[in-house]
Image (cartoon, rainbow, N blue to C red; front, side, top):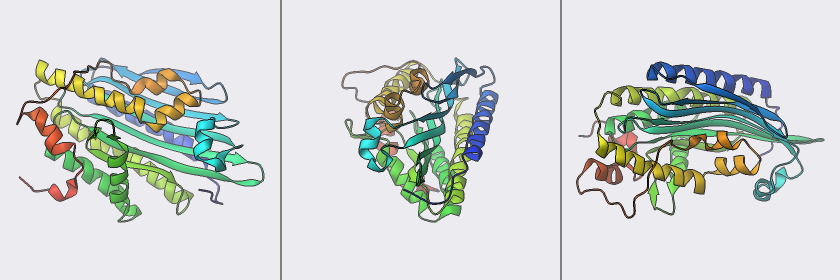
Length: 311
C-alpha cells in the first residue's frame, strides 16, 4: 500500500468540508422543516471534527452528517496488528460519514462514507489510501428504486474502468452482510477500501465521484416515497428492521470499532444509531406480504442492472 506520490491533504480536507456543507444543505431543503445542529469537537491526540445532526424532521426522523480529521502518534494495537507495516507510524484519518433514518417506512435508510488515511514515518514513503461507498437499506422494496440506485452507482464508476462497479458492488454485498443472521442489511451499493492505485489523482477523483454521487442516487428515491401513506403496521416493521442496522454497526462495522478503539468521540461514532428501534423474538413475516417480499425479492444479492425493463 506504499506509493511514492505525495497526497494533497489540504485538497482532500477542503473537499470533505465542502461535501458536508452541500449534503446538509440539500437534506434540509428536502425535509423542509428541521435543520442540522452542529457540535465542533477536538480529539485528544490531535485534530477534531464537526458533527451535525438533524432530528424530528418532517421527512427525516434523524440524520447525521459528520466530518472528522483526527491524528495520532501511533495507531491502536488492534489496527497495527492487522497492518504490521503501520506500526510505529504517526497517522491522520479524515472523512465524511453520514446515516439517514427517515420517518416514513417507505423511504429507505441510507449510509455513505468517504475517507482518507495516511501513516507517515521519517525517512520512509507514506502509506495512504482512500475508502468509502454508499448503501441502501429499504424496509419496503421497490424495484424502480433499486434499479435507479445501482444505475447511479454504475454510472459514476464507469469512467474509472469497466470492472470497478461489479467489484465494488460485490464488496458492498459481502461487507454489509449480517453473518449471525445469514442475511443482507439492505440492497447494497458500493464499498471500497485501500484504494491508492493507479495514482493519487485518480484515487482522489473516484472518492469525490462517490461522495458527490450519493445524493444523486438517494434523493430521487426519497422524493418518490415520502408522499406515501403509512400506518402502525409499517412503522412497527421499520422499527424491527432497524434492529438489524444496530446489530451490524455494533458487531461487524470496522469504522465503528476503529473509532472507539482510537479514542474517537463516542457521540459522533454512535450517531449512526436510529433514534427508535425494537426487537421481536422469532419474527416471521406473513406469507406473500410486502414485508415477506423484502426478504424474498430484495435482500438476496442480485444484479439489479439486468432487471431493468422486467415486469
